[in-house]
Image 1 (cartoon, one colour):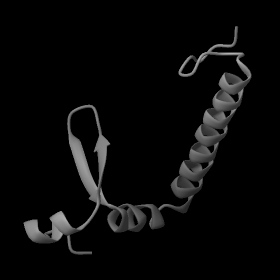
Image 2 (image 1 turned 135 degrees about the vertical axis):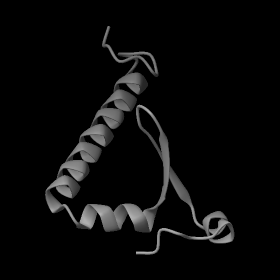
Image 3 (image 1 turned 90 degrees about the horizontal axis):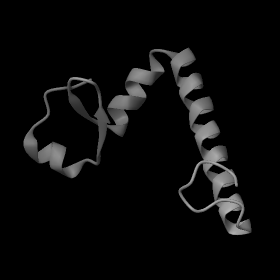
Length: 77
């Protein structure tokens, strides 16, 4: 994997921002896929976590549509 890419190449690729405690990383989707491919257990955990976040967001949207909670509020009335 070539990590030393030029400025022109970086500008052409969509970058994903990853904020850590002491720094911010910018990686391409290809770079993230390559890193996750080296650790399939982590990849599976990340997919499960992503699905859980999606389900939570969808449940929040359904509850706000029904008027049970205000949009953006995390607690039911």
